[in-house]
View 1 (spheres, rainbow, N blue to C red):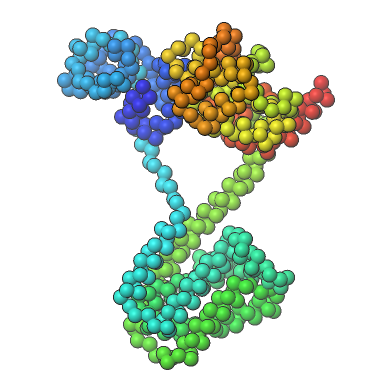
View 2 (cartoon, rainbow, N blue to C red):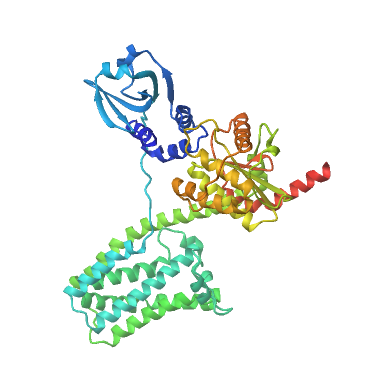
Length: 518
């Protein structure tokens, strides 16, 4: 039945909510009824109608709809010669209108087609191999087609080291903390990479800052050397010699203006100085360069500058979003906000009389109740989060697990799970944790779980308890699961249940204040 309805959603361009429908449908207390289908559509804001129509109106009906054909839910699609029906048992069949009308009871479920097709969100995976693979391939091809001597190899190695240090400098500039680098940068009271790198913030905030220069210099050097090893290495050595005045200026600023040393900046200065010394003392020392010797480096630099400018904007936005998210989390963890969003349970009468599966301290200040369904996908996570809270804070939290399932719906195969859990809890309470963990945490298959947790019989008292819990949920219009209740107030859906740990003391203080007033 589930796959049939999911196909119905797909035909009407609701593919993006198929999984959400699955969770809502399977967790519905009236699963697998027609009401469970339409109610799930309503929760997903899918405009639908379940009506009985005259058989003479068959040609006026939508191009596809759900119907009961031979007492079985069927997906019906209108075609030129009649209808094409899809059932769970027999698959796809083509029938004339006359044959279809003979065994159709006139009930249909139709939905409004989705005219706004949602685009799949692009998932950006930060896989470093994806970024370094092109460089590795270019390097491999370069080593295969070019001859590297000690001179060009030394420049390639120092440029790679310079690029790595340059990346760390940019990270430090953006506030991306690296534990190892932070310790390295603060070896003494006279060293502080952040103070030096953040010097003149107004300049650094431009589209191309001073901290970007080593990154562009070394990355362009690497690309140029891989393309034309010897000639590019000679030109890079010449540029390193020209950079010495900048190095001297940087050291002077660190020594006299900031009065702090940047270890990474000094490492960059050392690498550039080493490259200039190698070039100056080698047989390749020259002050005249041909176009072929200059072009690889200039081309690489002109290529990398716009690329880095674009990437820099993207990374800045990502970091800004992360910082905003951190601030929002702080705001979210304000108990006043949580309390404001927590709605009172409409009808609390009879709630204390419900007997579910209980864990933790009965005298705890935080009384957490979760109402679950054994077929609900989200309920697995909810129970695990709730149970983890009890394990971590056994003295502060009292957990009561209740169930929302229709005891009169004998077609629901998951009804037996609730019956057996409540029976085990009453007859063998020491096995309750294992039994419920097998279902909600280990996620045993239905057949395997029923085989392991077999009970002789289900008493009338258990059936009455299931009915009481179902009636109480119906009274409050709880036609879905999971439901989370903390101290007789609904825990807001804007919060994950595991975030309750941040408010335990607030709840306890609130209870204590109310007790004093009473």
